[in-house]
Image 1 (cartoon, rainbow, N blue to C red):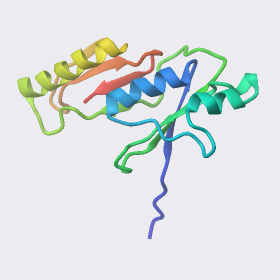
Image 2 (tube, rainbow, N blue to C red):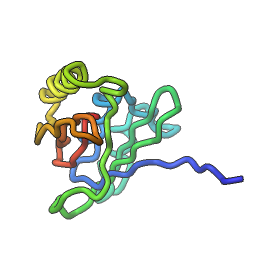
Image 3 (cartoon, rainbow, N blue to C red):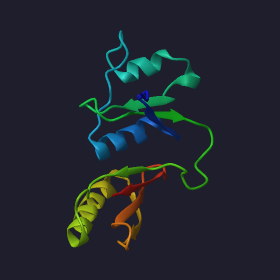
Image 4 (cartoon, rainbow, N blue to C red):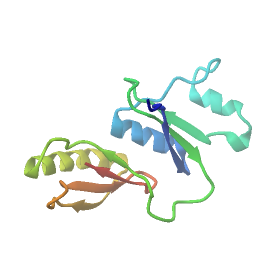
Length: 144
């Protein structure tokens, strides 16, 4: 019998908290409670050496079903297309104009949060339509 393992998705980024809070809004995730002994995440970060302050942040699915998202500061900026991306499932089971409407509505919700619309991939013989977007640091994701 295969062993199933839990996993988290890790994002390399420049501003971990900013990117984490964006994804909380996109996915309905929440920021976990700060470590024991700290009233806030800011208190925790201030307790760290200066070079480690604000270097990481996380987001969790409040239902406990989805993977934990971890955001870590890295010195280099994004330079090429992602080799892995998230598909945000907003049109599951929908086809045609109804699917396009759901994708466009979610796109309109995310744009004021800092998302960028890149392109609409229209349905073909094999795939339904999806909308390619970028998060607040330019990481690609799809509204699917």
